[in-house]
Length: 175
Image (cartoon, rainbow, N blue to C red):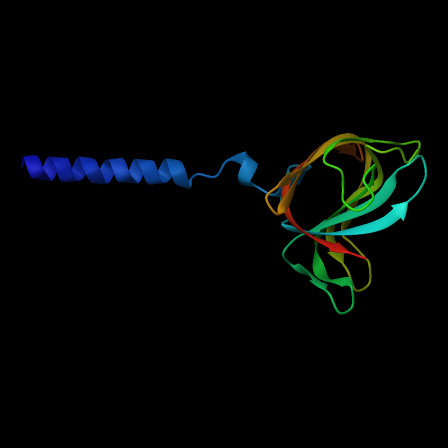
């Protein structure tokens, strides 16, 4: 009887530990939330458009859902899915500078700012159509590097709605 109780207790402890360790934290999610909906984005391409002015460099991040792929041959996205595009300005010439960025409605192109950014629902890359478009009108985001991936934490306003993103992205730099 004692062995059976010890066995049952051990199994219960393992189930509890597995449940605790198996639960994902919000930090582990890679999603955009807007208007009560959540969209998972795991991949991104980054285009470096080079020097613009004020000593800054223009990088465009295009984060996309798994329904979309990237063709290295055609250097283009292919498919229909969710897309977040962010145009940021960095003081670094060859890589996106890690740190805080704020929305710049006046288009100063200063390092540490971003503009011309939007989230698209069911974006079709072939004919460039979408079901919904949410253009950012204000906000901030933080860019960090975690191993080989980039973390973007964004909070902003789009079409008078709140948008949040906590993305952990595999990024492909393209030229």
